[in-house]
Amino acid sequence: MLHYLLVLILLVPWTLIGIPLVILGKLVDPSGHLSHFFGRIWGKGILAASLVKVVVEGQEHIDKQSQYIFICNHTSAFDIPAVYWGIKNKLGMLAKKQLKHIPLFGWAMWAAGHYFIDRKNHKKALAVMEQVALLLSKDRKHSLVIFAEGTRSLDGQLQRFKKGAFILSLDTGIPIVPIIINGAFKAKSKRGRRIAATTIKLTILPPMDPSDYSQETRQKYVDDAQDLFVEHYEAPHN
Image (cartoon, rainbow, N blue to C red):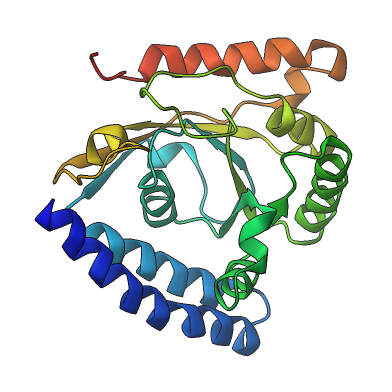
């Protein structure tokens, strides 16, 4: 518990330092590369303060200059800094629209290339996904991270994947790259009040080619991806 409180204490000033740097990075470099660099440093600082290490397996499957839709499982708040630090591609994430309205923090998320969606409004969410597709087409060096389950798992078990990432992949032709996150639930679960000093492992699998599927077979696209996670994910023991 002492470690948990210490991390919370350090998180506030570290984030307050990172926010203006990310916003300034966007102003200096509109391409977003500098903002992304500062965002990665922020993620690394959170991991270091928490005594959480990240190891990455399968970097050879992706090109840092190429564009992908990365899909991940989601069991912990540590998934975000782990992916942000572990994946070197310039990337953004889908986030709840409520975060957009947090002063400075929401601006920094926008500057870093993240996208905001309304999870409770299906029509608005679809409109945002159309905007995301357009923005991705304009910046072919900007990748996207989507937590395929939509929200964090409470018990660390895999949940059913949502179709959004796969529809976006089919609409844009951007390959999906599965990233299996192991160890984050042990670091901190959604309801946990302790942080464990541990190692999070990111396993990057080869890209999935959307041309192998169609809108009519998109459920198979989803199922094939989920099968890969079932094969590689090490669920915590109850």
